[in-house]
Length: 229
Image (cartoon, rainbow, N blue to C red; front, side):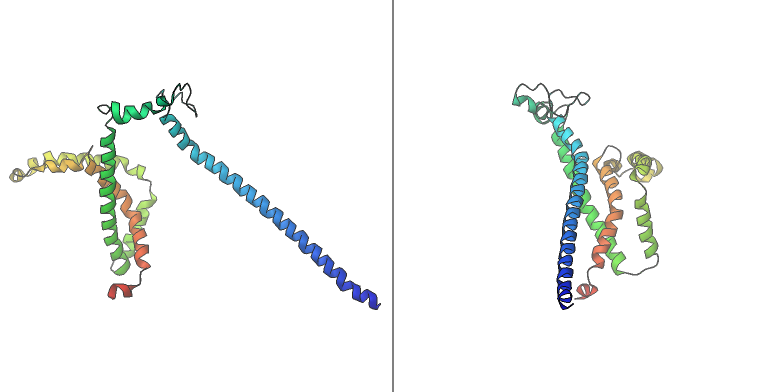
């Protein structure tokens, strides 16, 4: 009786060890299976995400110059010099047809001016929303958030008409107000259709809403004591 009582804890302890070891093996297998599933899903997502980018890069080096018959790897390339045919035509040889460097300069101007103006305006608006309490504050914030819900595509026709009318103001203002005829209103055309100013206005209108909320969250995280110090 005493021997059996002494051996029971040993048997129980060995059974516990085996149970713990089996659970460790199962958990290790589960982690491996979970990791394999995650890697598979990530790999498939990367293939779908990177394939268009790789296809565009391959098309850029394709000397045939067509996308309809483009393959993933350029075919019939006799020399490495042919891979740069499109780049030479775009950047050097056909600048009178494709003003590539003008496009780059316009993109730089639009991006720089839009970024500077959006940061300045949204910082001022977000600081007011964060630090001051005034009537209509909550309604304005909800209105800004509600506007961001609608896709920008819905405003395409309205933006076109607005920019079209802005371009016509240089002619309509002197006709409506003849006493202002001495002023040159041609500068308004800088913000009409087919202008960098009009594109900057469109980009600013699309970016200020969400950036105001982001800047407000940033100002909310700063203690007011720092403002008063």
